[in-house]
Image (tube, rainbow, N blue to C red; front, side, top):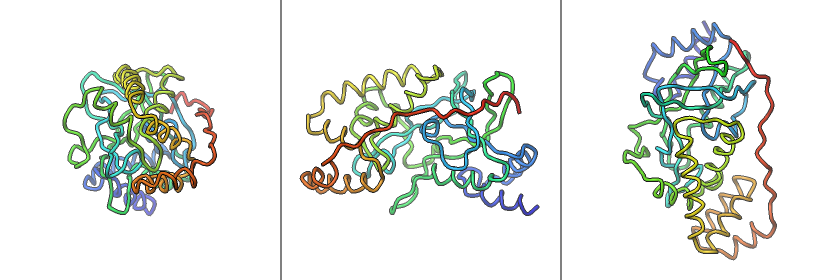
Length: 284
């Protein structure tokens, strides 16, 4: 009973579940039966998972949803003055999304959920970027038969940061091609996500558009001034949030000389994206 109350308290922190006690009860019962909980990952979580993940299961499928760059981002991959774009899911008949299942350990379920909340609830001094609402959805395992229910980030259509108009590929490319935030450039976010899809040959109803968008961003970046291209390339070499925050502050004050002296006096090496090897779970 006590553990159930703790789980309920943590689930209340998730937008969408906070005002749905029946769904929280169903989640708690499922978690207690399974002795674990899962998160469905489809964006940055597939190449940069949060803490307390025990196992990663690739090539899972969520049906009835499509993903896309539906949300503005002014923290992780954008700023207040130049918002970026981040992915979200929306219900869509006959669509499907490929991704990973991130599984918790039986002894770290609460810590796992807390780490998920911290990661997917972007916050800065001006408040919370409430771009997601959270649901508990059935995800098809790689064997094509077994279903695992998982916490999933879905677009919060009531958020002021939800983009309620359809942006063309070119419009998205312009935003992604120029935006940056404390986690790096918006283009890096797209590049790393698409790289995983290519490496594992994952293909869903958004993959073709993601390829087109990637090509459009490359074309857009070629049209930038040499100075802007150089700055964005160098920004992606920074290895910590502190360095990126300082670079953003200096750029906002147009202090290019200080940027060069304090941050870009040396080249940082970028570690290639690697996919950790986990034992594939074939049944639950």
